[in-house]
Image 1 (cartoon, rainbow over the protein chains, first blue to last red):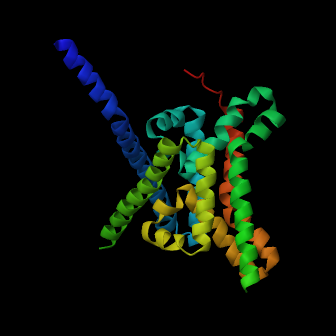
Image 2 (cartoon, rainbow over the protein chains, first blue to last red; image 1 turned 45 degrees about the vertical axis):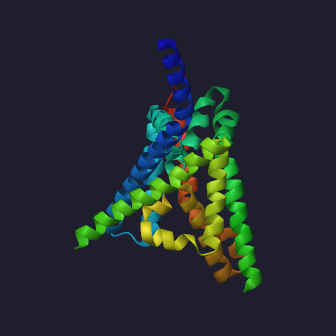
Amino acid sequence: MSNDYAARYQAMVSRLAPKSDMLNGILRAFFVGGLICMIGQAINDLYNYGMCLGADATAAATSITLIVISALLTGVGVYDRIGKFAGAGSIVPITGFANSVIAPAMEFRREGLVMGVGAKLFTLAGPVLVYGISSSVIVGLIVCLLK
Amino acid sequence: MKIMDILLMYIKAFTVGGVICSIGQVLIMKTKLTSARILVGYVTAGVILGALGLYKPLVDFAGAGATVPLTGFGYLLAKGAIDGAESQGILGAFTGGVIAGAAGISAAVFFGYLAALLFKPKMKS
């Protein structure tokens, strides 16, 4: 009788588990991703109100600051741990882009400074820049045609 | 009142940034997309939404909540290319995007290189 309960309990667990995993993952991504953006907002305000940089300079300085923070956290291995917890919450922000540049460069350093670090730096940054820059050029050309 | 405005901006940044990341998480779990494809998809989506004028309202509303995710980088590239095309024609269409994204691109390359020199990779557990 108790075996029957155990079996039914197991069946229920396997039926329900994937859904709660999903919800759990979404909540983690939401929380960590939101937190990173909020930190970005704080850095933005610091440059904007604290140092009175203009809008463009503020945006650029904020990006650079977030990338430096991500480089340090990736270097000491903390960003990977955040990534295990947060999934897309740590991939989608610009800190995740920086992490995807730095992590393979660190890992392949033993293959040398040119083809190791130099080339592997673009393992993930390459595709992002190829698609980002190419599509922006297309957008610019369309604007030229419509002018 | 100004303090309240700033506080509200933090809540908006948190919420919108969180939602954009959650969408990425759903894509990863539902479609098994790799993080490289997520990043490429987000940047391209940002360029397209920026070109259609749909992303700017989100940036005005949520600040860093919209600019920190990689869609914001795409938006920046599109905005630069459009501004460049309008002021300099075809030359601007080619240079505008990268000029606008220069800070992020240079910082990622430079600090990536620096970090690779300074830090030893951790053993995978």
